[in-house]
Amino acid sequence: MQEELKRCNYIGDQNSIFEFANIAISRVPIEYKSIESICNLNSSIKIRIRPSLILFMKLGLIECSDNKYLGTQVGIEAKSKGLLSFNEAISCRAITYLMEEELIHPSAVLFDCETSTCIIKRSGFPLCAAVFRNLLIETKAIQETNNGVYRISKKYESYFENSFRAKKAKMSLNELFELHKKQEAQGRLAEEFVVEFEKRRLMWCEKSNQVKQISDLDVTAGYDIISFNSSESNSYDRFIEVKSFSYVQSFYWSKNEMNVAREKREKYFLYLVDMSKYQLTGYEPIIVQNPYEKITKTNDWITEAESIKVTRI
Image (cartoon, rainbow, N blue to C red; front, top):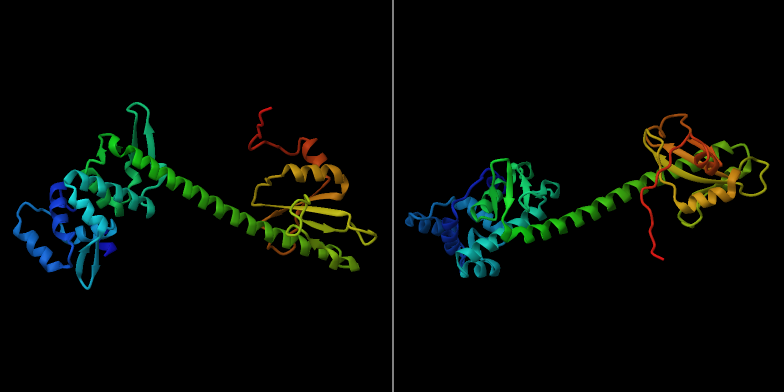
């Protein structure tokens, strides 16, 4: 069914669509053959029947069971108010469908300052969305221009804006969540690698079994792992903050981590783990002792603020 709709890019003109809606969106179940017969008897209905039925189902206007079609409450209400109201209803539902199915990416929607209108790039509609695009053109929700873009009708501009705003927010949250999960998993692998590295470094003394990962226990500590500098250490004297990277030695260092590094000085270590190499035999992390001095007071590193906290006084 989905493939059949993808192969269709046009179902009919707006008048034919509305006339077809009056037949297919029925209060009682109606068979496909009956719909086909009624349409064939009406020469004014120039419609592609099967793709239209599939499209109506996608828009939530009809339901199908045992090859019988029945109008939904939404569909029945939409057709009962006349052509203009029906066009508006199916346009809005088509926009919603395109958003939910991610058939238009928000990055394809722009604002044209010269005409003060919203536009959609031609590339914003994939081939599988051609039938929805052409439906929106037919209902005057969008207008095709000569310079390769689709101009959104003023009538539907706010609806498009709200739909895209909601989609962007959802995408941003999802992308942020996925990025956070990926970074969290990568960070955990790097910390586990450093724990084992430290145990190997101290393998000739009993302290190797006392190396401890504390990042899950104390998120405010300012470091991830506690270890020992040597077998002669009487207490924990190596505080390790683990940072993972791939290829380029770049990482984010929190204000709290920097403050702790400044306080602990020679006892504080940054272990930089290249995730593109950490599984290689013999790989060792880059170790920076007293990183506060070496990063903030030398020319070996570049620090830049990603954001600035501003508080009104």
